[in-house]
Image (cartoon, rainbow, N blue to C red):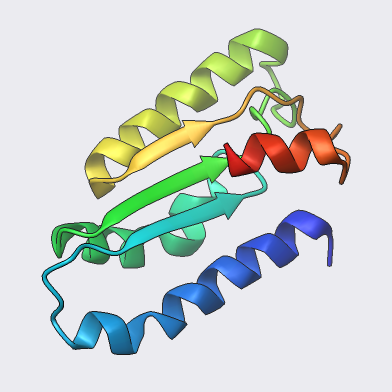
Length: 121
């Protein structure tokens, strides 16, 4: 399992662990951040849960670490990154969540301090 897949797993375990907090009906919104390894991973793996939590007035944010500029049969580079960003923003609107796509090239991430600080920001 690669590093970003582990991050996704931790994010979903965190969501499951929030269940007791959410069940108490607290009036204070909970802030939830789901980090994905690609610009559609958060939607695919957590979209339903995120939409439910957002409908309960919790603040949900998706963060895709790479910009998705690789891996398509006809598009590539900046054109593909723009397309994936537009898709992510539309998904965010439909789910009622904020959706950030960081500007890192797909397939070129390193587990270094610079990347970690970018995610923390």
